[in-house]
Amino acid sequence: MLVKLGFKEIEVGFPSASQPDFDFVRSLIEEDLIPDDVTIQVLTQAREELIARTYQALAGAKKAIVHVYNSTSTVQREQVFGKDKDGIKQIAMQGARWVRDYAEQYPQTDWAFQYSPESFTGTELDYALDVCNAVIEEWQPQTGRRVIINLPATVEMSTPNIFADQIEYFCRNIHQRDQIEISLHTHNDRGCGVAAAELGVMAGADRIEGTLLGNGERTGNMDLVTMGMNLYSQGVDPQLDFSNVQEIIETVEYCTELPVSPRHPWVGELVYTAFSGSHQDAIRKSMLYHDQHQLPHWQVAYLPIDPCDIGRDYEAVVRINSQSGKGGIALILERDFNISLPKWMHAEVSKLVQKESETSGAEMTSFAIKSIFDHYFSNQDPQWLIEGYDVHTQNGKVSGEFRIPAMHTTLFGEGNGIVEALVNGLEKRFGIRIEVTHLDESALSEGTNAQAQACIALVIDGQKYCSVTTGEDTSSAVLQGVLNAFSRSDLPQALVA
Image (tube, rainbow, N blue to C red; front, top):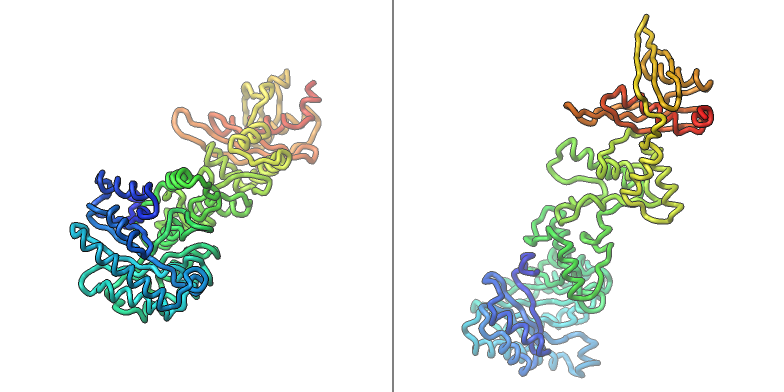
């Protein structure tokens, strides 16, 4: 997974700490599983027997980083090791010598050395510099040896800006700065692991250590995916392949047996999802604008990147519950069912979906929304399907004869157009007043199998009734739409009966 994502330096274990780690490192080397452009890294404490065991595990590797550490913080000096500053410094220097000397026994490997003053953030800055300078002196990077000084926020103890100040001071005062690499290893105890790493790089660091999705001790290590995606979202290529984040999530969950939060930055299940009505409406309008204007760069409200870039789709961008609005519901009907509604109908559909969601207390699926839409607006009563009609025009007036099963007899009406003639016929037949408040028609397709859509709103005795109807042409769609809307009132059934 890590190689596939594009990482070139990968810490593969602590081989002196356990037999499984040792065996794993050996299998990587003996089975030739390490690509030529990848360098493995292993961790060891500054003890001779552990360092010797580490080199045994790495025997035969083409190139490797040996990462040695000892704790330098005030608390650990005083309470854990019972040593003064000089005593802790001597541990670091002796560990550096052992790392250097044992490397000479394996000349076939291209070695790099890394040292960490563990709990750097709990260590006096000048003392950390003193210890690291002593280690650098032992390793002599000016001879061409790659040397990395890694500065761990083993426990995050301050705001990111203070950590960055520490890194800047360290970089300005460390010896042979142009001959060494400064690496950072932040943790997330205060929730700022990524921010601290980003500011640390701005302060002068060259390298970052972290884990996928922030796995690690306590609150976890700095999340490499989040930091990489932060760069990507600002137009900086992290040179890592995050095009299938679901695979990353599944792998991490399998290995750690811990779930990834649905709110995890950039990759969580709900990251590109809007339940808020105003958010949904803005997303719908923004995506439509983006498509219509063929914008060269992604600029969509509430979506900092195109979800497709990381293997997501638009299915989950808008999800509906009782807090959702008309824009989100309209987007789902358009996206999932190719039903495009005029703006005035958004509220009509939304209030029915919201009512159902409030009643059930559940999130509404796209198919549930479609079912509500069909029931209230699209389904047709066979008794109100228009069987045929004849239209005559004389002196600017349209006369129509409409054959409808529910009427039992032909319906006659007249007006300035065919719709007005049908409405007039219904008014005369039932002795009521009908007002057409909205009428929108559109072509859905062209050619021999052309389809048209009509969206109608009628007001009958002060009540509004709406319908969405399709037909072979706009005239038939509009006429059937009027009948469908009319049939949804209780009055016609009572009168016909």
